[in-house]
Length: 444
Image (cartoon, rainbow, N blue to C red):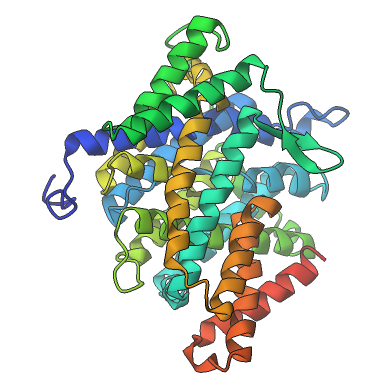
């Protein structure tokens, strides 16, 4: 086992990998509660029950998709990257595909399935890996730093430290609120532990925050430890229903759905791979080793997830929290996957992992990832502009993919105007055109 995962090469051991896997799981365990709520359109009134997916079935599908995807990533690609149904993609599915377009969720799952199959084909041809390796070093560092700002913003927003404001878009939250104070407590404790270089500081910080929440009553004590596993029957295999009437698939709307899933997942995954590999010190000559295997794992996970009954399964940036506590190999991903499988039986305990508990981990990891800003040559305007736009647009647009798109449009332009066009890979020009078309026809 140690030899297969190359523990000696990455200077790691079982303890660090298990701790990293557990930390990653705790950082992304919220998806087990959030995904069923989003896909079932919970809280949306006045819509027929046929538009809502069964929450229990989605919960099981979410856990199983995360289990299969993470284990596959760990065994095949050997990256410390966990997978689960992606945030943002599930919201697009529920509120745009189903609620706005009026496409039945069963047909929507077919779109997810098709996008996964297309991804697998693109990966086997080597096109996805070629595109990632064509991205210049400065832009990769910008993507990594931008994601750091993004997940920090997610943590601040989810904990209530930063809230909505109609006049200024965002503002400081109510610091006297108990749950906000709990998150602040967690941040302070985690920062102190990390500054003291305590092994597993982020994981320990999450545990201490959870305990503080339970003691103060800010986090409810779980009513049970073990719960009954819901039935997956309502969603399992529903993605194949559309093939009974293929005419439903040959529409402009369905094509838009597939292309959107393809676009967002492609660059979310690319950004995540670059960010995690950079933080773990796995990048070699500006290239990702075994990138093809990692991308193929992501594709297979999406296909499996769609069959189970959930939206696009993708690589999670929260994996950086596991890397931060020592994870360096795929063994950590396997640990995370097993945790998701066990979560099916211990679902009541998930109530303890609130946004106040995960916020400190996301924020501290964001600080660590922002260190990549130092790798960008800010004195060279042709690099500074696209890098800055990539970084700032991720949190402002609340989308990793949008940030990448904006930056990648400007990169060829600034390089061309600086008479350095020969240094730009042809693929970057193609991406610039595709991104412009995406904004015109999808966000126009």
